[in-house]
Image (cartoon, one colour):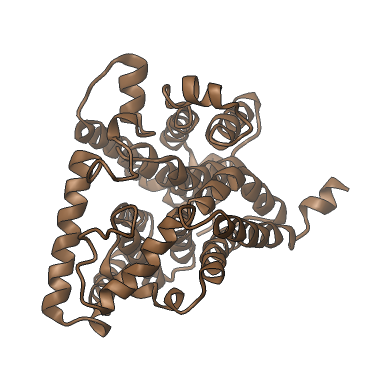
Length: 391
C-alpha cells in the first residue's frame, strides 16, 4: 500500500496546489498586514508605469522594494486581479515552479519526487505564508541544472538570469556551467539574456529613467547589505541574528569574524570540488554539486532569514534522495526536518523557539552540518566506483 502511495504521480502536484490555494486564502483572510509583501510586489509595477522611484519607500508599504526593475515589470498581471485572486495566483506560480523543478530532475522517479516534496514541505509552506520569492530562486536554480543536463545551455542561461533579476545571489547558479561543455555558448547566452532582461522595463519607462532605477536599486542593495537593515522600520532583521554561518560562529564559538571573510572562505570551500574534473562525467556528482550550491547560497548569506530556507531544504532534499541510507544520513535528515523545518512552526512551543531555537540559530545548524558532509562527499567522490556516468 505504501509503495502504491509513493508511486502515485499525482500526489506531489495535488499537495503543491493545495498549499497554493490554502495558504493564499489564509493570507488574504488574515488582512492586508498578512500579505504586505504581495502588495509591495504588485505596487512595484504601478510605481514603474507612473515613473516613480521604485526604491524610495512608500508610506502605504511596510518595507522597501529590493528587487530589480525587471521584476517590477513582470508583476504587471497581478495589478489587474483582485487581492484574493492575485495572492492565490502568486502562490500558484511559486507552487508550479517548484513542481516543475522537482518533476524534471534527472534520474528521479515518483517516490523520490514525493520524498523531496515532503522534505521541503514545512519550509515551502513558511515561504508561501510570507509570500516570498525564495521558491522561485530554488526552482530557477534547479531548472537551470535541468537545462544543463539536457544540453539546453541557452535556456539554462535564461533561468540563471531570471534568478539574478529576482534576487542578486541567484547568479550563483551560473557556477554550474563549469560542470558541462559548451561553456562559451553558455556565457554568450548569459550575456544575451542579461541584456534582454535588463532592457525589458523599456516597455514602461525611457532609457535614462531605467538607468536611474538600476542605480537606485544598486545603492539600496548596497546600503541594505552593509547595514543589514535599511532603517528602523524595516521588517528585515539585523545580520547579527541572521540564520547564517557567521551568526552560528559568533553565537556558538564567540568568533566575531567579518562576514566577507567567512563568505570568502565558504566560496573557496564550495569551489574546491570543481577541481575534480574527472568526476564531472558522473550524474550523481553533478547532482550533489547542485545540492551544495542550494545550501551554500543560504547559509553563507549574512542576512539569511527563515523563509529563505526553502532554498537550502531543496538542496537537502535533492542530496538525500541521491545519498546512501545509513544511520548518519538519516540522522542528518531528521535533524534538518526537526530544527530547520519544524522549529519555526507552532509544533515548537513559543518558549523553546524564543529561548533556544532563535538565539542559538538552530534552524541553520542542520544545513551547516549537511553542507559540510556534502563537501566531504564531493571531495572523496570516485566516479569510477559510482557507476552512474550518465551525461
